[in-house]
Image 1 (spheres, rainbow, N blue to C red):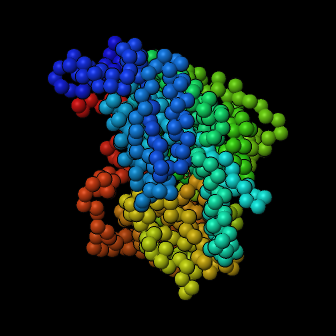
Image 2: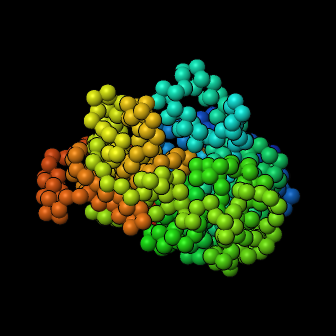
Image 3: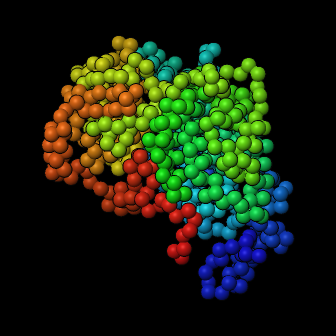
Length: 573
Ligand code: FES
């Protein structure tokens, strides 16, 4: 046997001694010889006091361990980095690739035959699955699950769509200090991930559709008994993976499952971040995500899931309406149902088991969609030569074709300093533009693309304006907001040379975003930008330097250039 404890021996120049020493140390924990002869299932522990979205981690780990033991494996829990969205400076995206590297190397370094990845908060599942694809060890995903809904004066509340809605009301002066404090105590009523269709929910849904987690894994609430039962089943499945060695992650992350995930991303009203993460995950398996195909799918695939911010309901309602299997059944004519899943079944088998819930309004049929188009559109134009993205399902219909005067902010700091100044020259029909907030520019591409409506306009009742940037936006946010403009301003993308007062045209139907100046003038400005002194100082040391040197643009998933591809074939030591 070469698996279990015999796997990946520490190098002392004597394999027998390496195993002897390893066993001697693990016996300090009280394990018997027969326990140590079992196949080993690694379980990531991403609990952190800074990550309430993972607050149920101890319970889930216990349930996974139970499942592993029931199926004849030996569970071994190990820690990795954890990233709590609102606790990460400068932004969680800056740390996603670090978490991915940490997770990959710990999977490779420690003796395990399969692995259970438990994560949930926005960047954690992407980081873990990127790592899994690179390590290419059999593994299974277990999301921590969503929070239950909040209640406030008869309204249902969802983090963080309603965080933003109430904050906008507070900025406009409609909600006072004591009321906003009271609301902050109601928005997040339990541990778990945001219960709207934000990035965490989006990624959990995509990974279930790709067969990387068990059916209903994406939707069971964090505190529900279903979540623990799924955790136990996940542990059982992981023990079977450890015994059989199949399927490998790169058997599951293939052209068919990536295309299926793109369809699901459009149909759930998913987060724009989901596109970046899917691109990064697929890139690790050597599969390019075709943005033209994604956009075409957006014209064909309607939004079927009626969840905030595109719709009305919350993740627990999605779960009780039948979850992902029920959605996949509705999408069946569009999907490749031959795609394999982690438990050995084909996608067709999963959706044949879907529960039929009479009278539910959360998962719509193709004949009565929430919106006739998919969640997102991919834009091009002289302002976005490589691409930009808009979440059309959460945008204002009257702004989808709009020409306006640019009001330019040079950085997140500049925007924060000036956006609420009473003398800011801005009108409701202007286009707010934020730059130097992309992968290298900020750095880490913060979720600053949801530029606040200038306070003086908010007080006049303005609730949406066209906003464009090279930044990201929370999946929980709404508005007519163009994001992920590539190339970003910090590396000389055309966004860098827009001047306040220029006119910009957005036409979502035509998939265009253009600066209305002639080509010669644009070329002149870009040449002058290149000759200007360096626009910012690159970091001198540490992870920040690695990030600066290696991060790719949004249309390439913001992965590090040296991490893509490979698919577990590394033989460098
Ligand atoms: Fe963790 Fe929303 S803050 S999922």
